[in-house]
Length: 447
Image 1 (cartoon, rainbow, N blue to C red):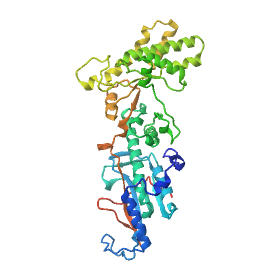
Image 2: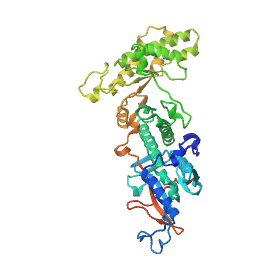
Image 3: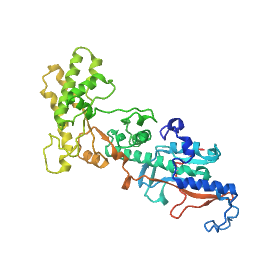
């Protein structure tokens, strides 16, 4: 599965569309054309006819069967700095099941004739964006026409999964170890959720290993947990509050009554653009139900009404009612540091105004002060870093489309290059200008 357990995922997890992948359905057409060309040249008995000015002195090109040429290919990313590598196991699975050739309607699998090296998912590679100084994450030796059509899909999974994992990792660093909820499902096709959620989970594990942390993964859909056994979680949607006529407290009481107790009670409090008022209303309503049930001796039922947190999701074009205007949109609109401070202060002191028996006052204080603050809406590493530098009392960050970011320093595009060819039993460097054979001490022989 990863560097964390030393195991690799198989097609039992990925469920590849093997038949169509073998046919080149998912492949850039020029690779399909190249594979066809080399196959036909092999059938024709074609041998090299050119001058071979790139061959070292003493090695003759005579008799080289280009159609059956064996190559060494390496896969690497162009992302500068640190990259958390994910997608290796799926790329290897593509090689295992789709390397070979067709004889009529029969596919002949030749994967066992390859030599394959790879890192594990969760490995880290470093680079400066220069292909001459990259660290490969996979290396394959074998007859090129047998796996030429797999360049496109292998690069695709490595690029996407590693980009998301690295973006998550950098976001966790910005959050200084606070939980980061994985909320980007709504911003892309549902078919990618399993791979995306796996990349997120690997990033969380890598962060825990590097920083001695114990964060758990939190995804929003069951599909995002498919490859590693996770399940989706979340808060309450704005639509649910609308269903209760805009009464956030009533919606939360109903949620707490019906949903299993293991689901955290996190109230979404920006529906009426008054996060302080709605946070206090929810907190009071939930606590009143909580302590009455405890007084009745019904501790199990009382646990349903423990308010875990409130989520602030104020739109970037709105100023919450509790935030006095300063005239600067960056300071006034959306989820701002001032809004979070307002909500935290209000929650921490609300219990002082409650008319409750004296014996419950200390419990009420603890109940209010334990309520966590979750923020969402436009958060990325830069915004999170700003909040953390200001010591804004955020407990959890929910991040969405920023985890898909792919521009400038977050571009994680992978490339695969042939860097050596086998000529008369001897491996010869044959990379295009600007590329060269690379090494990575974390590569291990897979088969």
